[in-house]
Image (cartoon, rainbow, N blue to C red):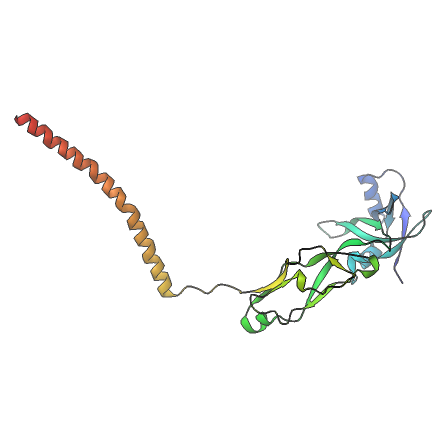
Length: 237
């Protein structure tokens, strides 16, 4: 049985002060919109919304919304805001959905097992994509995209094309996008011989750069000396 969210219409002005009064009363200000209907300002129970968000299907959970004076509707949570300090929900957006129309949603990627490159080669697993975007009918939205990474060796890459595919779900991410890979924890430190060779090369480069400057300084002095000699010869004559 889908969860039933009983919402109460908000009355009066819809501004920050009105929303603050709703929160002081222990409710969450919300908006219900979509499916060709005008947006409706409502207030809902925070415990019920938190239970939905922390469920297995999370924000992709489909539930019934009942608002006094309006027909019941299927809906999903499409956006929410939390207070930065105490992480309390302060606003949510609910969207009416039609069960016969495809939706675009983001679904969590759940990696199972311990990668071979971690077990045997001392690598570390780096998950690049924690969610993927898919398109499907509401009834076909998976709780998560589960994939076994036990055979992922060091420097191997798991891509979107490697995730479970079916005719009911269409991936909107690029098929070659990286989901996860096993990387080396750190590069090997250079040997003492490599350090010494690098120092010698740096010293040689510094010397080669300095030599042309010495030649430039010596040249004007030689020309000046030649000019003095020519002047002396002219005086003798």
